[in-house]
Image 1 (cartoon, rainbow, N blue to C red):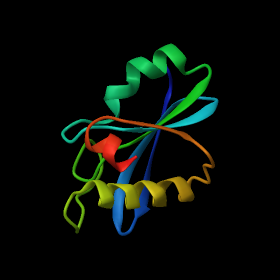
Image 2 (cartoon, rainbow, N blue to C red):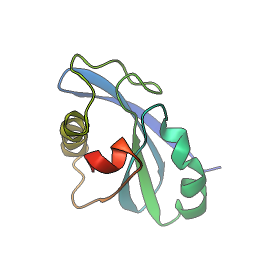
Image 3 (tube, rainbow, N blue to C red):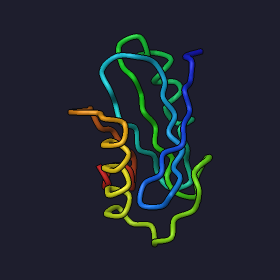
Image 4 (cartoon, rainbow, N blue to C red):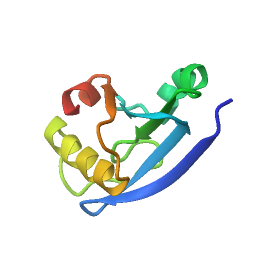
Amino acid sequence: MVSVYAQKIVADGVKLAVKRFGRGIPVICLTAVGHDAGDFEFLAERLGHKFEFICIEWPGHGESERDHRPASAMRYAELIEAVVWDLSIRQPIVIGNSIGGAAA
């Protein structure tokens, strides 16, 4: 099992859960609605020796708090940008499923 580092980051007034697995090249992981960071655990177990998987849980999902604005791919993109800047991550690989792909 890959070790997990979890933290909360406030983006536009929303506390988002960010879970980090592995170490190496940063990979931002974005899920579908109704899912959480657990979707990427298997990938992190297989590739965590080369990549750091940074999983952002959407507002109201996993351990993130609810948002004061409606959900949309554009809104999620704004939140992702705030998290990436807060973590000082430059030029990450970004992967996403469903609305996560649209936000990417």
